[in-house]
Length: 100
Image 1: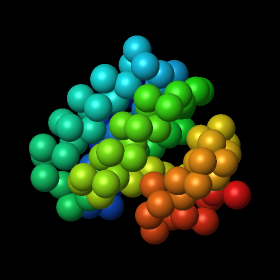
Image 2 (image 1 turned 60 degrees about the vertical axis):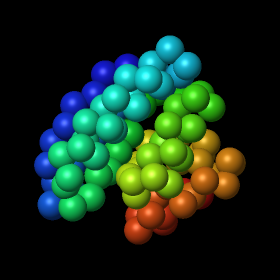
Image 3 (image 1 turned 180 degrees about the vertical axis):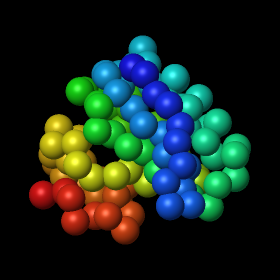
Image 4 (image 1 turned 90 degrees about the horizontal axis):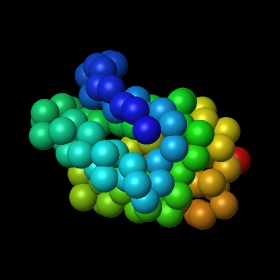
């Protein structure tokens, strides 16, 4: 898994690529913690490059949504389907239309 931060419309975005599984979920957690520590108006995850997400990765996303309001952008077909199947559409926040 790889990630980088960039700004977009007042939000700090964590762009993630590769597999997010039990081995790489701690790196995702560290990336999100870094983004949240920057105290941006909002933090979002750009999942365009994600190829796989395990329950460990979903757990990190859900925890950061619950604790810090971090939301996930739509547009990754794999993740969109996984979120729809698990009923976690809340992760999309205001861009919930992508799940389906």
